[in-house]
Every structure is written in C-alpha cells, then in structure tokens.
Length: 360
Image 1 (cartoon, rainbow, N blue to C red):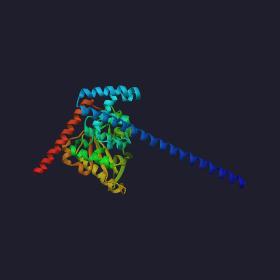
Image 2 (cartoon, one colour):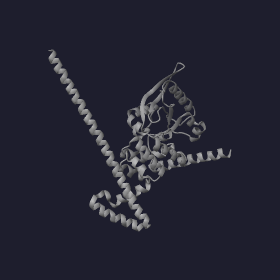
Image 3 (spheres, rainbow, N blue to C red):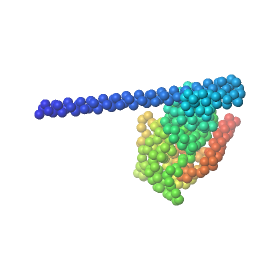
Image 4 (cartoon, one colour):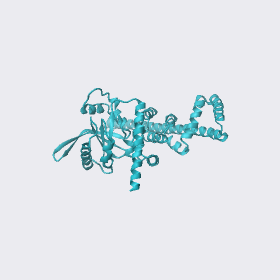
C-alpha cells in the first residue's frame, strides 16, 4: 500500500513537472513571437520612412514638381513589378508625406515599437501638427488598435481635451513630457464634452437612469473616459458628522495615481456643485487615499455649463473638472465648429490674462 502511494505521488509530480515544462515553453514561444512581430513592424515602418526620405531628397534636389510626379510614377511601376502593390504610386506618395510629417527618424523608431504602418497612415492624415503628436503619443501610451485610433480621431478627442485649449508652447511641453518620460497630466486625461450616445437614452430620463445606463455600458463608458481608468464603486457612502453622503461613481486612474470622483447632474452647472464635490474629495483624501497616491480629482458631468462661472470659481485650483455630456450627438461639422471656437476663445482668454498680469 505504501509503495502504491509513493508511485501515485511520483506520477503526480511527473505530471506537474510536465505541466510546468509546457507552460515555460509556451511562454518562450509567445514572448519570442511578440519580439519577432515587433521587430518586423519596426523594420517595415523604418523601410517606408527611408523610401520616402530617399525619394523626397531627390525630388527636392531637382526642385521641380513635375519631376517629382514623374519619378514617383516611374518608381512605382518598377517597384510594383518586383515587390507588389505595397509600392504603388499612391503608397509611395504616402511614404513621402510620412517623412514630411515625421521628420525625426529616432521618434519614428520609438513610436514604431507600438504603432504599425496602418497607425501612421491614420495619423499623417490629421492636419493639425499638435493633434498629430497628441494622437501618436496617446496611441503609444494606451496601445490603441487602428480601429480605436480611427474612433478617437473621428470623435475629435484632441479638440475635447483641456490640453488643446492651452497655448501652443504649453501643449508642446506637455507632449514632450509624455514622449520623454511617459508623464500623464490631467489635461491629457480629461475632456469636454463626453460623448455618451452609446447609452441609448431617449426622451425624458432621470439621474438614476443615467447612472444605471453607465453601469450597464461600463466598458463603453471607460473607453470614453480614456485609458488608465478603473471602476471602483458606485454610490460610495461617506459618513460626515453622522450624516450619510453618496458619491455617484468612484474611479481610479493608474497613470495619474489618483482617485477620481464623478458626480452626474441632469441640469446646467451650478456654483453649489463645487462645495459638494470638495467635500467628497476631502473625505476621499482623508480616508481612501493610499501611500504613494496623489490627491483625488473630481469630475462633475453636467447637461450644460457656463464657462464664466467656472472661471470665476477657479475650479482647476481645487482639482475639479466640469464637463458636459452629450447623449445625442450633433452633426460632425457643427461639433467641429463649436470645438474650434471654444479652443480659440480659451487660448485668447489665456493670452489676455497674461497681458493683464504683465501690465500690472
């Protein structure tokens, strides 16, 4: 009996050893495949960059637009015969545009560790240089798929961030911090407005319906909030002086290392919302913040808001953001006009404030 038990035990150990062996080899195969795929992607992106750079150099040397068109047409015909449709006239023109858009080969090499050629194709189509840099770095940081990248660009994510409303110099500085040190800031994370059309809310609805719809579509809501957000709790109970208070939604952002309190409002922003959110944030800071974390942030999602009230209340100094949410989207051209006007006004206000402080 004792020998039989020893045999069974030995057999179990052998089976366990075989299992570990399989897992180790599987891990080796998967990690090697990943490195090979990355290396192939980097090589392809840099090849296309160098092809574009070489053609562009010859075209610029001759300084003739007609010569450029002629050389691209001739090259595409020759290369397509040898290497296929990847070197068509259209794709060669795209490679030249790639070099003109991303002129620094080192930056391209770094981005290509995460971004494929298909990613770059989407990004070089963006006209605003600052927006291009934003999408490239956020895509790298949050590892967006090409489909997600298209959605972010189509949804005018850059125009909805607080970053876009800053002066160009400050935008470049924050993007450089993101590129060089992977430094996320609230202005990169938060946006205004938030598109909540996926909730499917129609007609009249109450705050509890909005919250229930968000929880039902939590994955889509987190996608709209952005990468790095993790859901913590709904209706977070806080006891202050024996009274119960309830925060609608509590999230955590890994990149910022902060708790993010979210309040949902069915109406236009009111000044007293500030005091309520400050109470929640102070409570979270005292009882929930862990060592190594930054102070909590607050996001008040409203049906509408007044920029002047928010400016006078200086909510940014309290770590509070106010944003509109849209459960039904306006036509894209209307949204574009609205966002661009908001950006212009915000930058002009900053410019005027700087002039006033300088004159004083």
